[in-house]
Image (cartoon, rainbow, N blue to C red; front, side, top):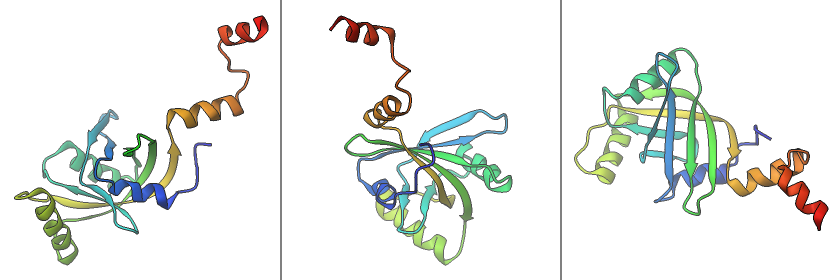
Amino acid sequence: MGNEAIDRAVLERLNEKDAIKALVTIDENGAPHPVVKGSIEFDGEKIVLLEILESSLTNRNLTRAIWFDKPVALLLITNDRKTYKISLKVTRSVVSGKLFETYYKKAQEKYGDVDVAAAWFFEPIALRDESIKTRIKEERERRPYFNHLDRLAKKEIA
């Protein structure tokens, strides 16, 4: 069930005040670089990240991802602790102009006196509910033979 339809309601949950959003990019050696990014939001059309630090590894990895058309991943943990993995395509980076100014002002209002290195834009390409209850239900439905031996023994004894 890995490639579920992109559920707009899940994308809107990126805007929950206490949601945890961890972006995972890949560095030049192929190593994953996960980092929590509170500045990720869904603007109704696309997912946006305001990257604050010009020299951050995330900023460099996103540049590499857009140049070489490599996906990145976003782990979303919602306020009610549902967990989603969203695979993303990096589509655009804005570092100046009217659109950039809009996001720059938004960052200033939200975080105070900060700079913004870039506004990064993403298109969701796959979404998967990784919540444990969902995964257990999937596992039991799709792979009933993947049962731990002690569960089978308990059924035989009963």
